[in-house]
Image (tube, rainbow, N blue to C red; front, top):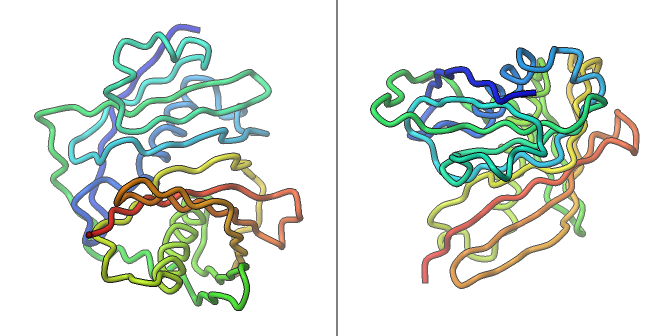
Length: 228
């Protein structure tokens, strides 16, 4: 299949001055549905979704077979990359920034905290959260990101040293088109690895939805920039 592209229009969510990773992911999945057919998601697994650079402009979303991605001429310019495993094979989607087309609209009422009913940090390594108001799996990811952010801050020894914290990637996430999002969802987080490089820290956790069985789990990484 040849590469295919479509323009994406983004809005800032709440107080943010950058495009949220979930908004980029949603635009990539919508583009893949047009490119390969919506049935490509039943079943499908996000092998890796990586937020590479902050995006403050509108995007061009490109889709192509995964085998062709290493030779993409603008691969190094991508703000985000999605690698998706499906029964039709592997697909890659990229969000390419469009200079001169700044994001100009904002959803001021958006508050990711509205997805989080409560978080429980410990005791022990396992943490929990209860999400509410979840209508689809993009809501689910937004709730998991916010719950994870709150838990990381609670567990930090020196939260005042965190200058910037961002969602960095999602790995091994099974797309469940028939999942029941109508009730509050309990989430469990388990620490996987922490990598420290100078003043940068990468915190990887595994999260799972117990109500969807032991087979549903995924990894999420947050990056931190710390002050001296």
